[in-house]
Structures are given as structure tokens and as C-alpha cells.
Image 1 (cartoon, rainbow, N blue to C red):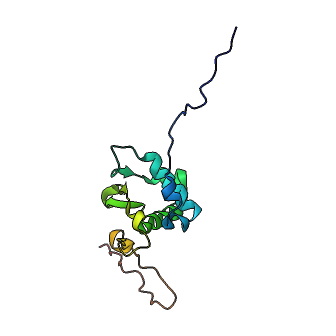
Image 2 (image 1 turned 30 degrees about the vertical axis):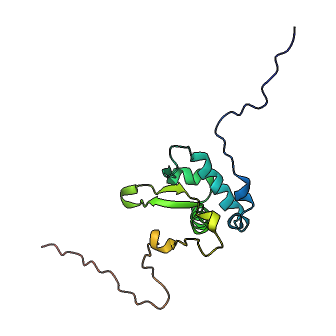
Image 3 (image 1 turned 90 degrees about the vertical axis):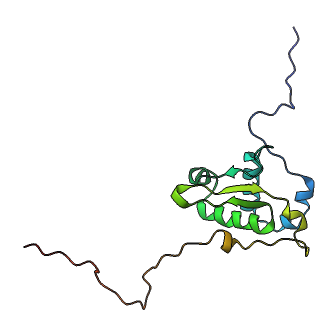
Length: 146
């Protein structure tokens, strides 16, 4: 009896590829390792019909990396032109919708369209008690009963 040959070229599960021109680009060379990893996560979620509809939820982010690292890496990908924010979420726990971009091809040239992340995704600052602030005390007075 002869043994059946296994197809070694068969790939199971999700997979992603990256073009050589991305690897050799100026935009790619300056990225940190977490940022490169996050780009692969975007590519895994990419299909030909959802180029501009890639969603990351908080639970999915926590499985991939720390949330702070995700935000820094995401901002770097937006600055370098690899991804774009299609729709801003946040209100009533709506997710941010991302899309893959080809702006990275013009990175480092005068034709590159630079996007200010602070205008697209502004941070929400909270008033925190700091040294030197006056203590206002309890602003709510107890109601006195009759």
C-alpha cells in the first residue's frame, strides 16, 4: 500500500500577507514592533469587501495587546498612512471603524497628506486633584429632616 501525500501548500485558518513594497518603504522602517504586529491584525480582519469596515472592540484589543499600547500603535499607523479612521465611535459604546489606506506610499514626500490625530480622536481629560489645588469640600449638603 502506498501512503497518501499531504498537501504541504494548504493553509488552514486565517492568514495574511504583506507586500514587499510595504516592507521596503520609509513609512514601515520606522515602526515599532507592536505597531507592525497591529498592522498584521488589521490585515487579518481585512477582506476584499470590507477594506473600509474594520472593527476592533475593547475585548478584541485586550486579547491582542494592552490598551495603551494599542492606542499608541494605532496612532502611529494613522500618522504613517497605513490605516484611516472611517467612522469615529465612542458614543453609546459604538466601535471605531477603521479602513486600510494607501497614503503610506507617499510618506516622506510633499504629496503626503498628514492627518492630525488630536482632531480626529481627541482625548477626554478629567479634572484630577493635584498638589496646590484648593479643596472645595463636600459640595452636597445633607438634608435635615424635620
